[in-house]
Image (cartoon, rainbow, N blue to C red; front, side):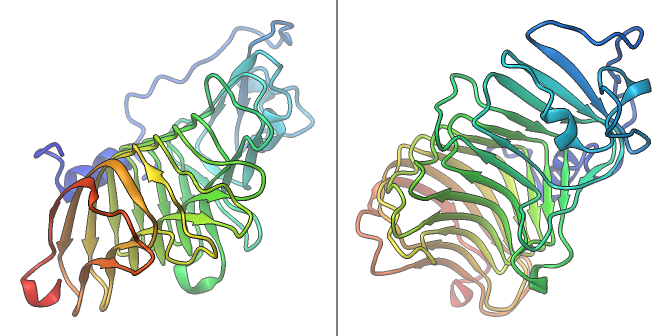
Amino acid sequence: MDENITRDGLLRLAGLAAAGGAAGLAVPAIAGAQVPTEDYASLYVSQDGRDSNHGHSWENAKREVQGALDLVPSGGGVVYVGPGTYRPFSITNPPGRIAVIGLGDVKVIPTGSQPGITLDSSTSTPIVGPLIENIHVNGNGAAAGSMIGIQLRNMKRATVRRCRVSGCSVGIDYVNDAGGFTERCSVESTLVNNCSTGLRFHRTPTGHSSFSYNQISNVGIDFCSIGIDIGGDSPAVPKLFGSAFVSTVVWGQTDGAICARVAGDISGCFMHLNLERLAGAGVIGYDVTGKAANTLSATVISKSPGDPSSA
């Protein structure tokens, strides 16, 4: 893990614009209001827009992200989102290259039944998966219900970059159900804070067993009751959580917090975890359950939280 990535530094990195500062950001624009007919499109979303607009210029921006995504052609496109607060959106079985990029202070508010952002490729395997960048998914508190920040459901090759997820029951949720499996996804330079669980790997009773080749790098997990949960509440044990690269800082700051719960089989992974107790009593570094059969097959380099009596 980069020794220069401190807690304050990662907060700034993850929140460059998601936290509010957008100085120096160049806002893309296109000339005129003509609707292009190409197979790849740029679309625009603004808090001042209307969903009756065509969305192909800032002057005719859509009001909601989903309205713009629904117009992305088969070849793909990029959706630029201006500062403001927006409803949840989803990208399901993307036909082409799709990016949603926030410009400035962009917030998405999840509901009790719908994650803030859902990425789902249950019936497809994209060559290049969707990109989500510079968005703050902001729930109404970890104890408020079942809010999920970002859900990767049977998703392949998605990238979440420079985002922040806060105030949710689950920050970033990797889910395998009967529709497939989640692999080769990347979460980069992102902050998850004030959630019940920061990162969760969840397999349903009929879900595929594998969460392989995922990459999690320069991710900070702060003020979460459980930092990383690999199968802890899964009806079926995830096996194999394999060939993954995980470079993460988990700051334990609540009483009885668990930095990493391992209840799935891990093999062929490189896990570089900085588990640091900043506050809270009885913070646990690793909670390895009896269901985790192959944890010794992984390379784990970690710093335990606080003094040994609290780990």
